Image 1: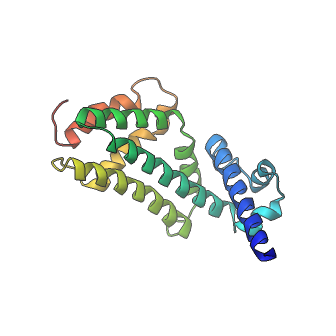
Image 2: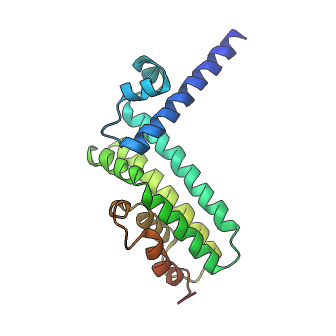
Length: 193
């Protein structure tokens, strides 16, 4: 019984740390967010962070993985509710626009990636997270619209890169939704809506 309560407390601590880290990484990026700031935002000491995560990189990779999985699943769920090509294109366009308005994730990924050696385990984990999202979105779209030219991973990469392009976070036009509306119909095998 005591062991279970200890495990429950440790799981709650870990979740509070992950939530604080998510908020800070999203808002402030990778470089500015420190383990001290994560601990403080969660209401713990730095020791609590180290008892749950081996490093700042480790907590970031876990946060990014959870955010990417949640974001992609929500988009695919929304796409499943669309009845036709026009609805799918508009759904992806609105998702891309929302993502482009909050560029913190793309910039923080770049901040971390630039500090890693080419063969580092961290960089491999980042690549896996990114490619998993590309394959999930591109695979879903290619399964639903099988006549486009791009392979699923390339299609997903195109859409994610439009959605998270750093320049689109501060420029009014063109915006990510406009770019998606321009390219997606052709990539799904339709010349126009």
